[in-house]
Amino acid sequence: MKDSQKSSKRETALQKSERLIAFDNTFGVDRLCGVDEAGRGPLAGPVAVCACVMPKDAVIAGIDDSKKLSEIKRERLFEQITAVADYCVVLIDRETIDEINILEATKLGMKKAIAGLKIKPQHAVIDAVKGLDTDVEYTPVIKADAKSYCTAAASIIAKVTRDRIMRELNAQYPQYGFAKNKGYGTAEHIAALKTFGACPEHRRTFIKNFVVYSEVAAVTEDSDAGA
Image 1 (tube, rainbow, N blue to C red):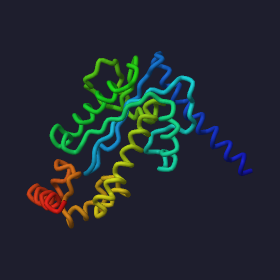
Image 2 (image 1 turned 90 degrees about the horizontal axis):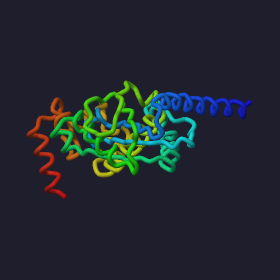
Image 3 (image 1 turned 60 degrees about the horizontal axis):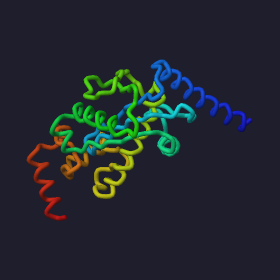
Image 4 (image 1 turned 135 degrees about the vertical axis):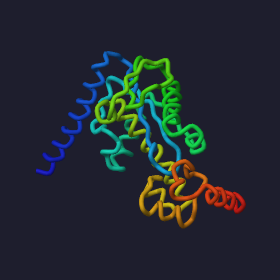
């Protein structure tokens, strides 16, 4: 009975991938690029953007919107996807996000990620974002990471890449719980901000409701002095 249930789950995962592939096939091109980001909403850390082209002969069961997958499944799928895909990940840092705003930072990352692919795609599916400065024709699709195979793959790569970075930052700034909250504004994270002030990775334009800029500057200077 257990083996039968496992088989059914595998078939369901495969069917899901095939459904997403069917959506991609409606664009009628051989090299379709999916583009998605991870980290637009957090209070800290970079935004990670990935452009991904999946080969036609590689059907990986279980690919889906990264937000719908457990961390264990994302990590496993990340290894499978990156072994066969043409992909490029771009990180836009906190300073740039604060300077040009998160939407423009995301667009910049998407432009660079598409340009960073080994072979230029014929078309791109972008998760919701419009007004992209690229010479590749593209279609913005709302919730593309839940509809498009290559975009879902891009979402997984972006999410896993950024989560790993946030775990590394947790080692530098353990008081904020980055390994757990990934920089998002959880109650615990906000409480830590109010207690300890901001670290250099906090987005100044995102935390102004919790920490005034003079306090942010002071905390950063103290951190630099103690380094």
